[in-house]
Length: 159
Image (cartoon, rainbow, N blue to C red; front, top):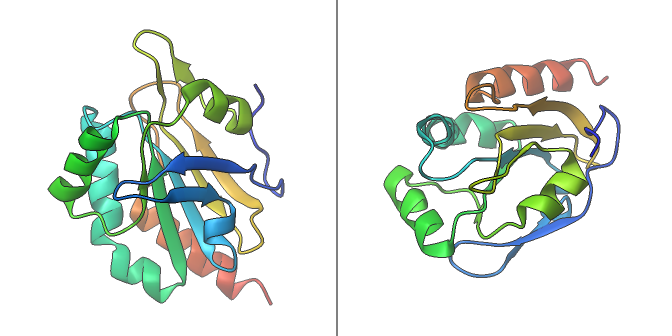
């Protein structure tokens, strides 16, 4: 397991989406700046706070042309309840295979019970990693305000 480096192409990942269909990364984010939030599960209060903050920032993110997706190992019903609780408008993946996601992205895995630790990626429109945040425990994750500031900076300095 190795961490993704800045400039590296984000690996192909597919997970079932709450409400049906599939989230296919990085393809679903192509052409936009993308945020991939891997969260520990709906039971994690820090993950709940993170997802709620990205939901509140949805207008600012949309104005910057940013798409957000989240995924976890939660079962569909549990993930659907989380989406409803926080009125999440972005795609949320469920039933992720922790070991496959970890092998592809370098995310840390908790063994018993098995879930993915919080991991976040900001992707360029071409699907390459602009920055990655890996946590090996409960805290340490992308923050919506930091992400909007970072993307504004990147866009202003792209020329």
